[in-house]
Image 1 (cartoon, rainbow, N blue to C red):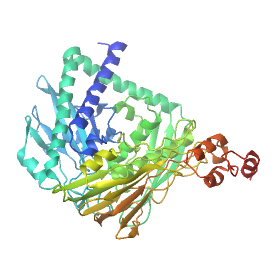
Image 2 (cartoon, rainbow, N blue to C red):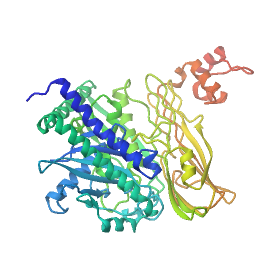
Image 3 (cartoon, one colour):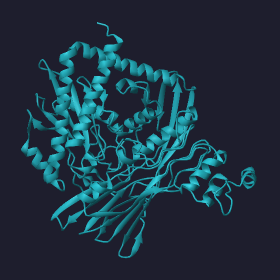
Length: 579
């Protein structure tokens, strides 16, 4: 049968709604603030044949767009060749192995088959960031790990739920290897509940429209997504576009890592080649292949947000396997920084290449760091251990039409920083300062957005802090004459001394006690275009709002303000800008 346009549109929205409802269920039922408040999770529907993406929640992390596709495919393949137990109705598999289509160990994926008439119709899958998965430091962000085993518990696909019942033995193994184990049952139940809600809602759609109609709609939506992406690509001038992005260090060797990218546009396809990138590194800034692929997909999703999300949207994107580089990690390379940080450097390289081809569509580089700050310790007032995970936003890059977004979420997600009030209720900390980081936006005709500045004090007990951030050595890149955004900064105040990590944005296991403080300044976005072309009235407004000082107006934008009153000295400005 041939679907009419209205039915196809209704089914597209219905499949999207299934995923959105799974996302909401997951967040509302979860215990951990990183999921319940920050929404560090994602849900989707995947093909029963090869795990390819059918639909994903609009409120889920974009970096999981490609990753869950590959992890679901791996489960299907392992079942087929006998490396994994065959499924039955009610089974839910758990997997977090980075090398089986994953990210870092803290991103735990569930996968559940949905049956119709005794056969698997599709798979539902989701990912949630658990605040701890064991390993050498609380929170799993081991900045100086040299093997994946140091980062935590690694799970191949196993049945956590069998015929709807939680497997007590598997659950006991998990709890015996992670911190604050008694709280994980809330996240596990929430993650499973999201899949069950999805199954119920999907069955309702199938019952109403019929399995064959829905299957036809899925195939047509995939075809149209590929067609739309190809049409967008076809409008790009043919040629090869080069760029580079840099990771501060790998956390072990204090030298930058290079992402070298060549994007070849020919006809209606784009080929991404990372040859020339740095070799596999000693520390945890390696990226597994699934994360590298997904990073390219999410970057193109930023550029062409109108393309419906499905596996079809990826078909015209050819990513050559970056063998022999740190972007194709093999066991036992550590990978805790791959999803949260390296993925954003990959996206930055894509933006830096594509802004040359599509200057009206692509922004300067965003902050590009999730600001991973993990704090673990004991709260003597409550008589229990805790693991706190803080993520933070930063500035987005300016673009051809306007300034960058201030304190936006990371490039890879929609995750928001948990509210300060929630964090102070849940953990023995006090936020002494939490504000915009003035002056951090890169100068440009359209400046970058501003990062975040915050300071956290330990109120009670002893704790250990770890950081896996980035952009501490190099700020987010400006574009087309724009200047780079401000770098990430971390300062630890303890025993009356100030400590800056040798790797600037990475260190682990810093011992803290009551009264000690951690101060973080997140990066601002890169500027777009020549700063000397910025409207002088916009510079004046930024100074009036406290975003830049009068001195910065002069040095960054060539705008002179009159002494004694806040006004532009037009004559002096024209002279300064003329050089």
